[in-house]
Image (cartoon, rainbow, N blue to C red; front, top):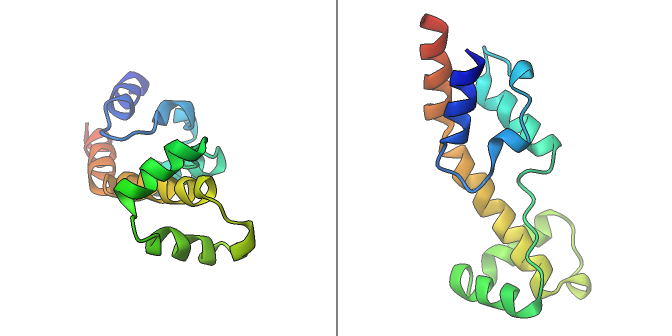
Length: 119
């Protein structure tokens, strides 16, 4: 069973290398998605850091040219305007995008573990 879980998690369509953040033996089989998300979160797996001004500006230009979304995220985290820069805004947005992408896998993950229990 452990091999099937490892194979499944490593094949998930996500930018996160899930196996780096999840202890397979500690997955709650009744609530697998929530359990996996919590482990990724606890191990900072959703935290993306974009360094270098040019990388941050390019990322923001592509994903949030108005800066509206990234500024909203910064506000939710309590950042002061004076402490913000392109790297922080890009990192906050990249982290949110990776987290949102992973949340889209909820049904796939829960279905896999449900099928696994039935075997």
